[in-house]
Length: 203
Image (cartoon, rainbow, N blue to C red):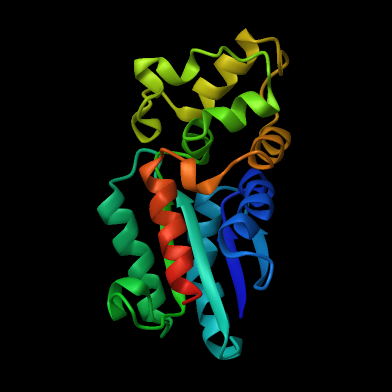
């Protein structure tokens, strides 16, 4: 089996190259295609999916991963599902549990950095000066509900600990944190939904 991941930006690419093998092992080949942000990905997605419909091998699969940001998650997910349907590709939402499908649409809620807050141990392994009390703080107990932007919150905490004083380097941080992440302990619900969907995709 071969999986093509379509993502918003290079920081997600850096994270997935470290995370995906931890979820599905090394037996499945995959490639991550980053875009120049969410608008770029959504604009190019219909054409890319139609191209895959014409050329996707029988064992090929596609994962589309976007940040929810301020969008309504149901509306955004429906938009992704409609793009796949219009391209003639099957999704998990259409075929249901247990059946094979070609496209997995998933949202990071609200942003990829919520997944990092879902694994505080990985954050502290990458950046040891971060406060040991981070996981006990009420505002971080539900990573998918962090107010005011998750990447801004991550930058703020890292700066407070003496890292990235000139501003968060998202690609470097994503790579360094993801190296230490353990999928089964992640407290982000959107991450767990992503993991479950990926396992279903490979059967």
